[in-house]
Image 1: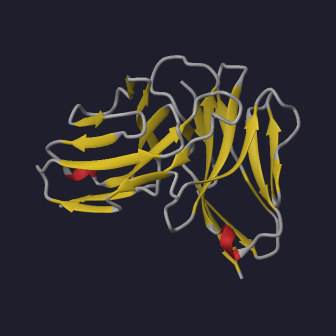
Image 2: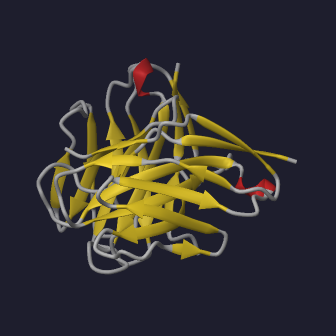
Length: 118
Length: 115
């Protein structure tokens, strides 16, 4: 079974600064997807960014970018020019590309609580 | 229009009761899921349902049962509620694993409190 580890329970950053959230995962598969989801106090789960494992190029979405290191099984999220609205729980998630039995869907890390200091 | 909607948003009930949470998606997706988020914010899959095939996470008690009247709905029934069932329950859907289809779209969650 795949596991996802987020080693930072909480991170704090000054507004307008850059912050990096860490994520590592364990899998024996070669093809898969990785995601970062944001959960603000409203509780809604919002997709921030996704990465396909077969793509070497790191995904970017505006101020959000990832550093995907497949060999190291690392998938960190960088948030540039942090804004107050970025304050939320951030979850790293893994999804297999193939059906391998068991309940399908995403495997989540335990989350990182991001605090933005004004 | 809300893509994945679940009701109610909040549910407070007594231990031992039976309750249901409804979920509907208007995205035309083939697969729906239920996730449980515990008090420490950990999200864990409970069920996935695709083309009438139900896959159950082995850790889910059989007091929990999903019911799907059609492809757009996956309701969650919980019998004999226990204190430990208190959590936020999320419904989600996805098209599958085709490109762009592997993303999950989540409902806004139902906070269940068992007293």
